[in-house]
Length: 318
Image (cartoon, rainbow, N blue to C red):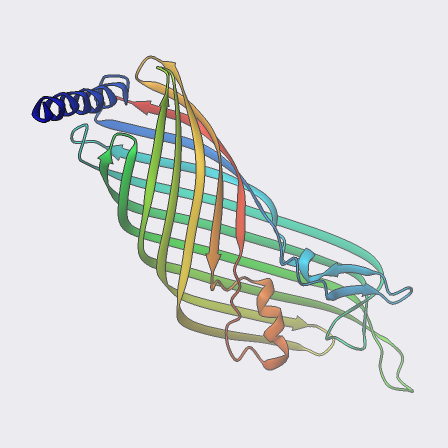
């Protein structure tokens, strides 16, 4: 009796497994898969940094604080994935490339002062903050069961940042000298080329014949060859100074997200829409280097930027 129950349970389990294998992927093995998506990502600034950077000399109102300066706004970019499945149930391989770009500009006029620049009264002040994120990765994935994959791979990430603050006004000179016109240009460039390894999980659920839900989790450690370059030009003082600082450090990158795939053309073309969140740590952003300007940039200032948003695109299988 016990043996019969065991045999029956085994047959039921094998039947369930074979059914799951058949249902996943719509009963057809497509060895190649190409995903092309577009992501729209919001990247907030440092919410805890409300210290004024540019303020009015007339009433003390803040034009720019630390949070505003470190917020590059909302950006977008392509997301390309090429996958190869040698067979339906073991290893498969993926190459993925992504780019996100942010740019935020501001312009102010009035009677203003810049923190740390006593004696300079700006009548015009502008900022231009640009950030570019590039990720290239190669992953090997193993199917533990239908819809559940573990992965590991190598990844290169580069976050390149530029911050320019420029303006003009008058410098207040000691008596009996009259105020003198000046123009000042302050440029910071921060680079974060990172190389390392990552691991993660992919989870998927088949909802009927035409709908799939997929989620993912990634985490990795990277050697960050960070570098910052700062240039200050002031025509009144006749100065044109450049300071360069670099240093290697261990950085972290993690991301998670969910996608819904819906069939457009039977078994071969899908659309997808979803959301993602990305987390970085020990990254030298351009605005964070301003805190070191008073120390002569003796080191690199690193922070933990994050960004999140929506992604959508097409998924071709053949």
